[in-house]
Amino acid sequence: MAVGAALSACGAGGDNPGYEYAPNMYHAVPYEPLKQIVDPEAGTAAEWLDANSDGHGEYYNSNPLNPYGMTMRVPPANTVPRTKGGYLPYRIPKDSLEVASATAKNPLPNTNAVLAEGQILYGRFCDHCHGGNGQGPDEGSVGEVFAGVPSYSSAAVKNATEGHIFHVITHGKGRMAAHASQIGVEDRWKIVRYVQKLQNQ
Image 1 (cartoon, rainbow, N blue to C red):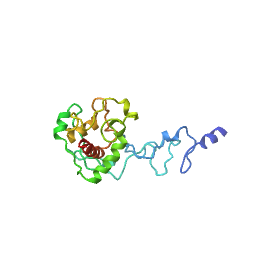
Image 2: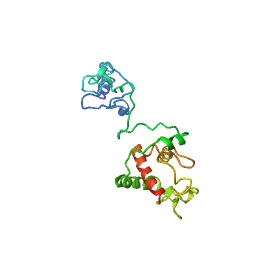
Image 3: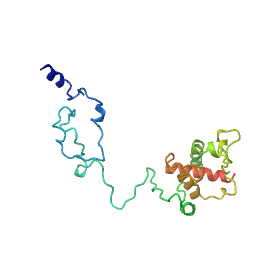
Image 4: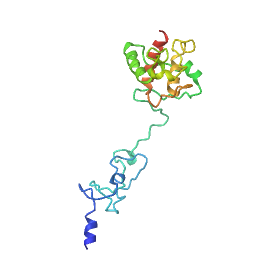
């Protein structure tokens, strides 16, 4: 009887989380979009596991406010997702630099505000290799180990198009690694505007 009382004291209910090993592994608060359990009774048989006070089973994770109880809405057919700023995904492959050079166009205006933001982003992501003025690593700087970084005003880079610059920032080229995972689409275009300013210095 003492053993039964001790075990029942470990049970969870209401505001009492009970005693469980790694409870966060079992009691997920948010909806999980990749699984869909529509039976509100799912998990009620395992009373020791059910700490919900909403009357549903532990495993029920559907959203009754969405059609068919789905936790994640299916996008409309034949649509393309856009980023927060309304930009389409950049889908020019890495090996298509010439296509990008000829077709990709900067959607941002060439204004002082865009250039100022591009300069800040350039200082954060580009300065250490390309130098503050785009002429390559400053002498004595940490970036000096990256020998061979071309100047933006050099013959090889001076006439690079906005699409070329954006593509290289996105996918990388030569020693330069891809920066798409670190810099959002809009911020990459801001950097392009600032790099174009440095090309003409």
